[in-house]
Amino acid sequence: MSWEWQAPPKVWIRDVSPRDGLQAEKVIVSTEDKVSLVDQLTHAGVPRIEVTSFVSPKWLPQMADAEQVMAKIARRADVVYSVLVPNPVGAERALATHPDEMTVFVSASETHNQKNVHRTIDESLKGFAEISAMARSHGVVLSAVIVTAFGCPYEGTVPLSQVLGLAERLRDMGIHELALGDTVGVANPRQVAHVVQAFREKLPDISLALHFHDTRGTALSNLLAAVGSGASRFETALGGIGGSPFSPGAGGNLSTEDTVYCLDEMGIETGIDLDQLLQTARFLVEKLGHDVPAKVFHAGGKMIPVNASKS
Amino acid sequence: MSWEWQAPPKVWIRDVSPRDGLQAEKVIVSTEDKVSLVDQLTHAGVPRIEVTSFVSPKWLPQMADAEQVMAKIARRADVVYSVLVPNPVGAERALATHPDEMTVFVSASETHNQKNVHRTIDESLKGFAEISAMARSHGVVLSAVIVTAFGCPYEGTVPLSQVLGLAERLRDMGIHELALGDTVGVANPRQVAHVVQAFREKLPDISLALHFHDTRGTALSNLLAAVGSGASRFETALGGIGGSPFSPGAGGNLSTEDTVYCLDEMGIETGIDLDQLLQTARFLVEKLGHDVPAKVFHAGGKMIPVNASKS
Image (cartoon, rainbow over the protein chains, first blue to last red):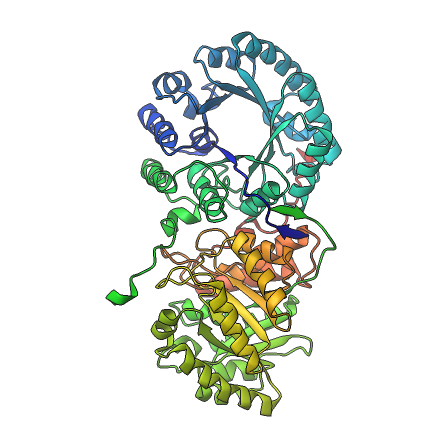
């Protein structure tokens, strides 16, 4: 393993806290506060934001106001506002709100897909074909997330060939924007570097994003291993919320502020203002009414040296 | 920046929780429990353990039983038991307990050294010369820690030339074992890689260790950047304790269990048994009476797949 510095790249971060984060919360955040969260992320310079999810309110009451949130956010032309859709019904609701991007999701492992959405992987892909046609007719980008891409809570190890095969099928359906999710937080940096390199070699026409959970403290290291292997798109969540961060055995998302802080310090551009981001995190914590795992949130940002002459 | 996998190296971890960890705790752990902690770390295969500190009990009542702890631990011949000494008086006390190694410390920044030990860097080094002679006459290895090596809370940025210059002076006094401490947790992986490479080029006769704090979530990434640059000696603390982990603005040590888990997954050998280590962490948490920041402690270790056929 070697670590060498070449040209500092630019990376693109999608903050998923309004969707992936808030849907894991017990408290239901008001529509007004969700809109404010998205608007503050926009203001902080976050280039991509996952705004909401068009799932049935029966399953996920936290996202019942998806239409209202999409209608009320103040969009900036250079920011990509995406929404998650589970099926063609959700896609139809989503398209009426004019998102820049719609995202579908499927598991890399058969067991997880069946537990998660009660469908086989093949059945999921059939639904995507329909959604893909709908997206195309509306001129909306369709992207996909492959969850459990680095390990499955039921099947354990997920062979890379299985992930690559699934990615190839998605690409052949016209889905070129792909995120790999480390849903349970079992990826390690060596594996991540290997997976990113394999995608660059075998599926260079896929625009690859990575989504890490910090269950075992490896999330930022995984992101840096991916950057070092040429990846430049990542999904993170403000505060590190999502995935029941305080339950044993499940970990939150990699936090946006920890990511931006570290990349800033390394001279890797994100376009995001850390101070604005921390202000937004304080707003989020106030609305959630509980602490969040993000380290930089607690540290308050960069170190500000104490003026020694004063003491 | 690039991340390439070569031969998986072996790394040596020194667990500093019995000293660096416990001295930051409000609760005073009993001598019996300290001895048990050290013995359990030995049993888990930790190759180096910082057992205690011979500072004045007036300053640090947590370490008042240094002699008793050193007398009661069950030593294994292949484990290095080290102790921290602040001055020649402490060194004399320490040498009577037959440690394998004594460690002195000095700040890379003048202001921090004066705030920390009320001496100039020059005055600290004068004391080390005396301690060095004492260590030599007893056949005990003397090592040094340069704290604030990656940034100082008073002076801010610490020039690398200043750290290298101080390391050279220590080496010229016969101190070849050196640890660089990121005392306030401001190091970033790019900087760490640069520092490790500079030491390898300019001071190849120094055996370099790294000691990171996780104030801003970068500690494990910093360790991996150091491994990728050829470093193989690290100081970590069980549970991630030390440095007031739950106070804003201060962060605990990089946790031993998070480090061992990640290195294990990457195929990098530590010689440490993760399950034994987690058992020891549970003992530590019970004795401290509060939670610890280590992620792998909460996750309970490696992922164990649920047997899907049962459900």
